[in-house]
Image (cartoon, rainbow, N blue to C red):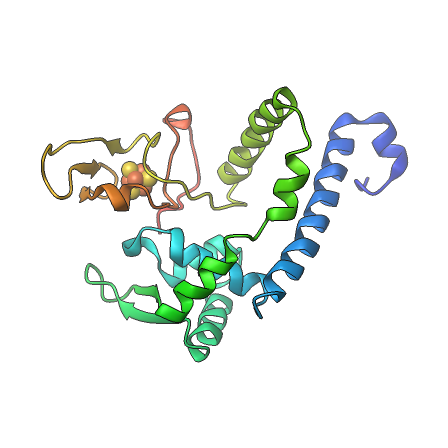
Length: 215
Ligand code: SF4
């Protein structure tokens, strides 16, 4: 029975929550469209630019972008091509693996991204109307749902290093790249550690089965 069925929602709290989330998704889609259009972009183009801006440079690949957008590799290439034609993005082979193409913002792309910092402001305003306790409870419960969807392979969740099970903070004190990632066996600068990573694994989830999303 569908979540859209009012009879099911009357008897099933999970269906009511599911329907509320579908309605939220509709609202977010509509708001994203309007906010991206202000910059002359589609929501997917805006999402791609923000992904490139906030992801660690050595992980900002077309493959990772496809996972972030929830699209195929071919579709992600189409999005990137459009941004390259507009002079907002360039691509280059990864110095670590020539088969991987990394994405970079041009100065024009950086400028557009600065304007995109206001993306999501309407949603932030709506959340600002909730009181602190409701907000904390929402954060806890939605967070659990997000990680559950990630474990099911439905979502890519990128976060900075702190709080990740693979992060070794200050493993090489005094070095230019003092931190270490045990997953990729690589040292990281403070700046890189603060950028998002699609392989972030919260300490609380360590040891639990999860899909192979390291590609
Ligand atoms: S896997 Fe964890 S520690 Fe390694 S780069 Fe990603 S977030 Fe940082």
